[in-house]
Length: 313
Length: 289
Image (cartoon, rainbow over all chains, first blue to last red):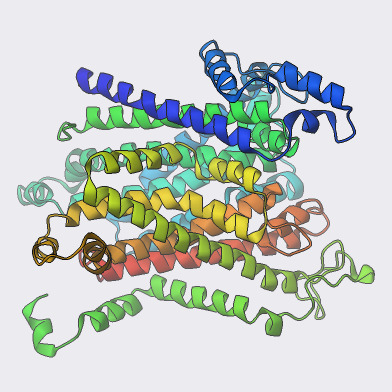
């Protein structure tokens, strides 16, 4: 297990290096000069040159590449081309909001989705199952931002129970939670749909196994077969696929942040694109990529830990 | 195939079709998908008004006999814009998935067939692309390419390609040692022939299921990009940019956002149920459930 973990971590490093290189290149091929973007179309050539010099854009590309990695290692994400503020500071301010939102959605999705999935599988082809299936199909189909708008309409405009915009004061628990409920629901309900569907099909798969038939044949109580034999095995793919869905949720969180005008990485990224603030864009993409690499790594490790049948070569 | 079915002589295709029709959700999805495609094709005939025609005297009007779904803040008929908007969604959804399928499947099959360094190179490239959530990748590519219809198709095809590559790679590895593949190789068939004529038809079912489901994903991606302002630009109606415009007048005219969003929801739902239905039809283990 330990050996596998070390090997898996080592395997992630080259992928991460290539991903970071890709981000570096993508930002370099974006149309338009970042210095012109920052200063506006009517800026004098001297001031554009001065800013290019300051941002390191006059250096040959390989020097910029080395600087990019050098700075990343020291945690320096550079300065925003538009505002001049250190990007790391901006990221530190908004990252907790994105992490909080995604974490809340994942937890909500599992808490609601697993019982719903179990009930759907156990009562297969009954009203409960159909209701669950329709509900999870709707959840899989609805775009997060649309769900967000509907929630705003109902719970902030028609019944003004929650604030519409912003993330509130992160460290004020009450204020934070009030601002988290609607965006969290918009994202959490999607996660719930994934988990419900996954739980249902995973349990149905396990119910077909021979050892479940044996357990029934031994005369064990239905409840014991379900919780001791079926659920334990069915949970393996549910946990494993959770990582995959967490990645999907991180993508959807961008939309939720924009609909609710909530501070976060996604809002920072879209703002950076609109303002052509390439330093910020580059940093946000790096952080997203690192998050995904870490999630994939942790998912694999959890998977190998909970399912001893899996042998990695 | 069991004995009874041989006796009654029902063909494989007929049996799959019956299974599809018997699956109520799938057939509803299929009918809906066909309906939406027809609406997009016949938009000029179905649309009651010109989707770009402005009427200053009827701004933000509610539902009425003249405007079933009301009008937007320029006095344009919402229903007509929704009908025309279906074209953008479906064109982008369909073509990006087909392009992703062709390129991705090619990559995945070549990687799996040759193995070794080719496989490592291709599949690691796929891993790298999959390190970005779909939307983040799409936003970055749109920022580079710009956002017109063709570029959006290319953008979403780039997002779809690694998905198809991974799927077809996995499927190919399962098929690689099959007797029919070895037989084809033994009679001296060239690699492209083995891949295209022998292996592809056998993994096509899986690709079709995934492709149908991913048309929904592609449509949602397009709507997301349009909502952010990176999709096809107004005044051309797309469902995503209509929702965005509707948000500004959400209190006075919630209908604009609600109806446009509902169109996206129903379309994605249709492709999702259709994809599920095709899967049930193809996968004998699930048939009849």
